[in-house]
Amino acid sequence: MFRDPQAGTTTLDSQYIRLTTIHGRDFQRYSIERSIHLQEADRLESQHQMLNIVFDDRLFFPPVTGVRSVLDCGYGAASWAVEVAEKHPSCTVVGVDISLHMKPDDMPENFIPQLDDINHAFTFDANSFDFVHSRLVGGGINRGRWPAYLRDIKK
Image (cartoon, rainbow, N blue to C red):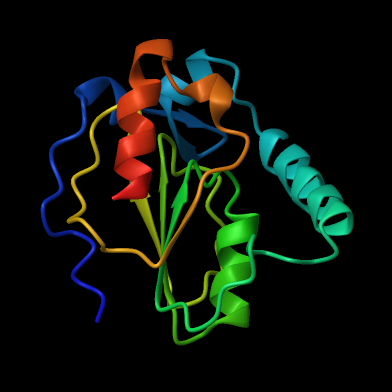
């Protein structure tokens, strides 16, 4: 059974928590200052649709059955995570990303978005997830973090 996704979490650096208001909406200042703009969600959704075509609508490689818990690292606009959650309603999908401003307004109940930095050690217990999704996050992971990141997603 899946454990509480908040258990064992640590405080995020304050630079990721500061907000700025644009047109009456709050956005993460860190993301705005680094040019993660409002059209990014559309670009990520288009990218997800393109990969669905390339992968024949397969969400898992290799095929996985009986998935109960999934971690999506760097979920972006949450397209993949939401699709998994919708197609597998008995599965808990936890998505971590450095910015929550692109998460969809309408989310399945079994999708749990978390604000986290994948450049820091994971706080999840070993064997918390049946499947870990880490796609197209290479540019966001610091060079020195890679060996530990690979160990984190494997545990």
